[in-house]
Amino acid sequence: MTSVVISLLLICFGGVIGFLARWFYAKSKLTSAEQKAQRLSEDAVANAESQSKEIILETRARLLKEQQAQEKEARERRLELQKTERRLLQKEENLESRQQEIDKLKQSLLERSEALSSKEKEAKDREAELLSELEKVASMTEEDAKNLIIERMKQEAEHDGQVYVNKIEQEAQVQADKVARDIIVTSIQRLATEVSGEITTASVSLPGDEMKGRIIGREGRNIRTLETLTGVDIIIDDTPEAVVISCFDPVRKEIARVALERLVQDGRIHPARIEEVVNKVSKEVGRVIVDEGEKVVFDLGIHNMGTEMIRALGRLHFRTSYGQNVLLHSKEVAILAGMIASEVGADAEIAKRAGLLHDIGKGAETESEANHAEIGGELAKRLGEDPRIVNAILSHHNDVEPASIEAIIVQIADAISAARPGARRESLDNYIKRLENLENIAKGFDGVDNAFAIQAGRELRIMVNSDKISDDEAKKIAKGIAERIEAELRYPGKIKVTIIRETRFIEYAR
Image 1 (cartoon, rainbow, N blue to C red):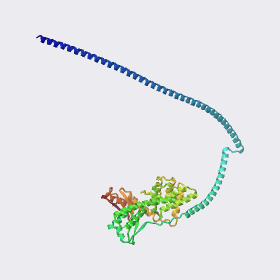
Image 2 (image 1 turned 135 degrees about the vertical axis):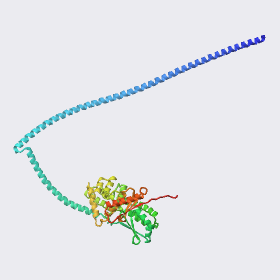
Image 3 (image 1 turned 45 degrees about the horizontal axis):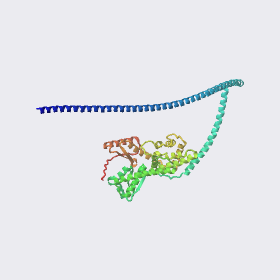
């Protein structure tokens, strides 16, 4: 029992000792943590104070720098204001000096004005005294004397002037007639160009009469295709080994002639081949047009001619007027105009250029119904030609008044060129004008792609756009065109209006 009690006492004593040991250990731990926290707090305070001092120092340095910059700017502004003030003071002094000079000048002018007024008054008084004395001596008023003197001087001047004018007119007339004859005769003698005959048809030779059948083709397909594509009239008659191409448009006639010659030479004549050859020849004739235009410009030494104007000139190579080749006629007029202008002291370059372009309206590609002078004048104006050249083109048939000596010279040169023996005949121009009017009437309808006057104007063949025009609409167009032709044109016999509406579908096998 005693041992049990002792054991319990020992256990209790051990528990007390353990508790006390843990309490002292915990207290020592808490004291160490408090000390560490106190050290951290002191370090944080020290760091904060250090950073605060650095921020304050940095702020002070920045403020000091800004203050120095503002002081520098203020000094610069003060210096600039001082300079401006000095300049203003200098200007003010200059103005004061000038004002003093102006005041002196005003005073001087005032004194001079007063002196002049005084002298003018004295002169008027003296003049009045002299006039009064003169009236007393002559028994005539001042107005009567003045009128008498003026009337006598007027009569004498008119008489002398009329005598002098009559003398000048007589001498000028004699001299002008002589000079004009000399200039015209000299110009004609110096000019040498060939005489052109009237050309409305072209003949194509054939290797044999059997070729005529191939040209016509099965059911007339070949000849119809060729006429449709070129807009010409192909005449196949009893003429041995030849066919005749007739067309008022010389460009289309040339395309048809060359194309037919090539087809005959090649031997392959069918619609597809005909279309291929016609397209190729059309491009070649286009190049010839440009070449002919450039050639005549080069021959005459004319510069700065635009492409459109050169093409219009080249088309004149295939055009005739009253049987005279228009391009050769225009070249001839240019040469004559340049010669005459040189003789009379006008601008030879302007006269030569205006002479070359005076009929340019006949070669312009346009559907306008205006005459060729108006078309040519509009074209020249649009392409920036000299106003004197534009006026010369417009006035060469007296549609408008000539505005320069060069325009009158072009009229003279045009008349000289046309009046040469055999140069012109009157039969072609009206014929061509009628056919052009036929085509223009057809082209004025919507949906018409092209129109060709063939059979010497007895047939008008019209190609319409199949996508826009139906069969019923094509019939209406044909009737409308026929009615307009009846209303607007005069012609012998009757004119056949043919509408061609063709649809093509093309695919390629690859």
